[in-house]
Length: 296
Length: 290
Ligand code: SF4
Ligand code: SF4
Image (cartoon, rainbow over all chains, first blue to last red; front, side, top):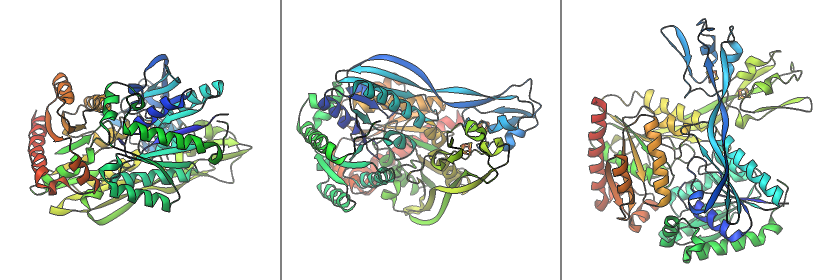
């Protein structure tokens, strides 16, 4: 039996990777997963050695075989993404716009359109101090980051099941596709926010998503001392919606120092590290009571 | 002239730069600010435009009719895995459906009809100095950010006949490096990359530079939270990219933006953006004539 905890942020740059890396350090034997596949950072502060890397194809792209094409335009008429173009009466597909849906392949009277898998990223498994670490890198400007996130999750889950360990996830920013893929099947989410108007706005949206998927959520306010008033405001609004704020993390130069030394902040110490340690103690202590432990 | 404000990583101050730059431009020229960060749009918090028009963004999803005798064709055809045949029934997962219509074309019995569902909203209005503002908002639980971005581009730029000669479009792009950013940034005259001098910041700036090169956009860097470490400067020199502005690391700036206030309203910082406006106009103009 194992559980999965995702650290998310809504707004980017609030310090979720710093928190996730510190959790990895504090949790001891654990499986880590970096689901921020568009701008992964966890590997920068989690000393590791890559065990395996493989290409992942999360999408398709259509191509027209010129010799078979009779330039009838049937494909253009069904493509809802504007990916089919004709130039001088010759039809072709813009691979950057093509969503790989295959609608065109169903209408081509010549069977001239084929759907080929497209490499959309690299999936990696690495060895870090506390255990294995699943991560990925989305190919530049690729579509289907959600699918790549799902792959990272599956890789981590498989490792967790085999070793009986828990999973800590460095989530994706935002509240869309990648976040949904990050949190589905998690037992808990910790949302790291900043005490700013934007921070609250984004937090609210990500909480709406975690609520929508019925996942237990906690909040931590990072750099709370930038605005004690806004911190209180966020705590009040979270209380109103029944979400517990599990801690305040102060602004601390040790965070940047740890990043530069490529270490979790808990290895450098300081007030931010202390606050994160207290948050971890809190979340890990109440977990068994509060969260239904379910097989992943 | 169209400027794409990019950051690779979120939280670098991309929106801070975008909104203040838009305000700096608006006093002198017709300016459009468009917030393409549809998952977490924040620009309006600062600009507080008077909203004059809104539009719902929809996408379609299949509804399986009575004629269906589950044959597995539609679920096999759907590359988004939005259809599944379970226990002699076809289940539809609207949130992951891309609305491509392939299943409708594939169904041998013509059993599939399509229904529209709202996936987001576009809003536009006017802020001070006639600054035209638009934003896109993806609905919670929905995944089609790209569709909202594409509709916003038509709504904010094309339909309004904006981006015409002499006017400025400031495109506040989403973070990351996926096709969402590409749809928001492509076709710009200049990519302004907002970076902060931390290890993560440098890593993600590299990502933004690669993306700009991929889209063949000339790029320039804005250093935010500059602590004088010269971290970004060294990278910029190596990469051959100009640094067109910087804001110092200063808790006071953090406090001003935390409140949702504009730095353009603060005498200490306004010049930074007025100078930035001049610098980026020069660069973008040069790239246009080149
Ligand atoms: S696969 Fe879909 S998006 Fe690509 S060209 Fe064909 S119809 Fe258009
Ligand atoms: S419209 Fe396209 S994405 Fe949606 S269910 Fe049908 S085939 Fe799948």
